[in-house]
Length: 263
Image (cartoon, rainbow, N blue to C red; front, side, top):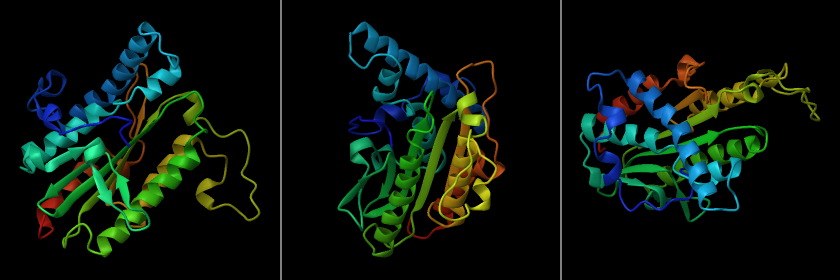
């Protein structure tokens, strides 16, 4: 979820941005890479600002608690809805305005939702994880991704979000670093044999890929995107699983919205 920010509307994200519109004929992958690079720029800006303001959480924690790190990725998808799918900006809601009714709980705040009158068109969750402590939030992120989808799918089945079937998406950005891509230091030793996907000391990057892939395979989300984002701008951005690439994520969204009656 987009970190701790109140967004009244998405109007500011629909305005042309120089980093996104330098090349109007640019590929989806090219625009996606620019948006991912913005993640690190935003973190550095927030850290510097909080240090200058003397905030107590300045430094690594300040970069995490400052919020809005994934605004560039959010804007990329907002512009796809407006420019390609031709939804008005007034139908797109972010942050605290992107709250949906749940089934197991009263409400759930997503990061981006699109509405067509009383019909939910799409809901998207954005998550990120950076070092150095990659293991701190893995289980929480996993449980949250599963729980949010199950809750919303049940709300959809009960007719709380309209008669048509909306599209659900999950985007996960992981820092590409030794701590996220190297094999785990120890084997898993639960009371029973672990699933074969988690044998052989998989890295956190491997585990997040399994999570994203299975979220889609099991029908909890319509599509997921997993990206490895290095801090070093000279290093390439990674999309290690072809089934979890951003181009496929956007293609799934586009096809569903255009083909599903009532959206």
